[in-house]
Length: 168
Image 1 (cartoon, rainbow, N blue to C red):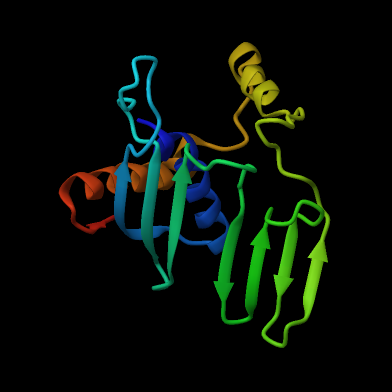
Image 2 (cartoon, rainbow, N blue to C red):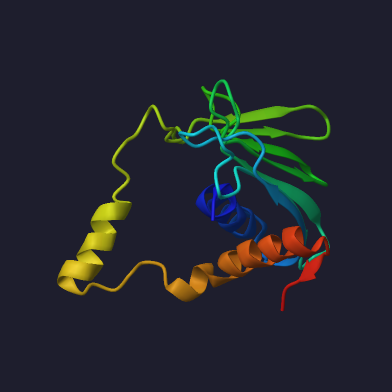
């Protein structure tokens, strides 16, 4: 698996977390467009994924994961809702920007996203190692992220079959 499993899993999990609900349908195009191996052949896994997700509430949105986004790294997430728009990690100065229907803008500077060029210690690897070495209980169970994995696999199936896949 390529970009869909590498990047798409995290974006899918974030979407479900922010929405407070799960994906119920996915229609996806997952393909290799540009990345080449040392011999100049397209790599053997996907470098781009574009998915249309339908949520439990009926909300519909897109999720894109790409290894071929050239230029400045883009890790943004944008939610469009009836009470406004939330832009996450789109602005380098403010990690969250809310734009209300009356055009009022509310800015939050909570933290900055980690990028390939700017890594900070998040504690995730340390917590993982504590589970293995000291037998500590994981903060998140494998079951809590299972729906995101199911969505990734359903999206891969959708891309292969050209059909919308419903998740149970």
